[in-house]
Length: 84
Image (cartoon, rainbow, N blue to C red):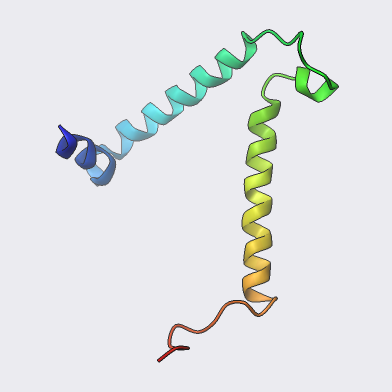
């Protein structure tokens, strides 16, 4: 059983099926977000469908860019053979 799951996520021949599965999951999550009641929302942006997904994506992108900047420009990144 686990071998079939690992093969599905690891082999290139299943790439198209994986892509379709992930797109289907994305569409279902977006549709489900429109069905959530929003009476409990405290702020205006909490009432917007998809706000959490957009906020999470932008936060992730910002985190990647900040870490890249700190690594390359901030001097935190070292050469591969630094400790040799």
